[in-house]
Length: 165
Image (cartoon, rainbow, N blue to C red):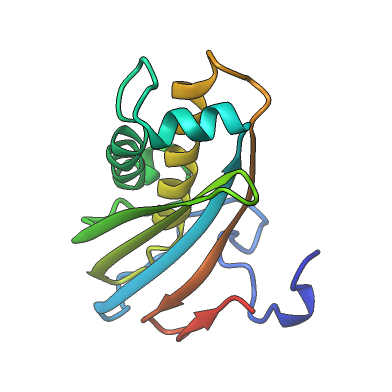
C-alpha cells in the first residue's frame, strides 16, 4: 500500500472484539483543524474548451461543482458510516484548468474548530466536485477520468500536522 512505511498508530474504528465502532472523542480538546484534498478529472479538448467558455448546456460547470463540493463536504457523516457529524466553519473549492494535461484540478479546503479532524470532509468535497463535473459534461464525452484524489495536508489535533510528499 502507498505510504505504508509511514503509517503509525493503531486502527481506532474497531473494538476489542473486532466490531466497527465510532471513535469516542468526548475527552479530546477542541482545536482548529484544517484539511486540504485534491484530485483531477481529465477530459477531452472539446470538454475543456466548453467548460472554459461556459458553453455546457447544464450551466456554469465550475460554479455548480463548487456548490456541490461544499454540500458534499457538509454531508460526509451521512455518507461515511463512522464519521462524526461536524459543523464545518469554512469550506472552499478551487479549480485549475491544465490545458497541457487536458485536466481540471480541484482542491478542497475544509476548516473547523472541533474535537476530530476534517480530512474526510475535504476528500468528500473534492470527490463530489469532480463527480459533478463528470455529470455536467457527460453528454459531450463519457471518456473522462477522475484520478489522484488524496489528502494534501492537514493541521491540528492530537496527531499533529501532515503533508503529502
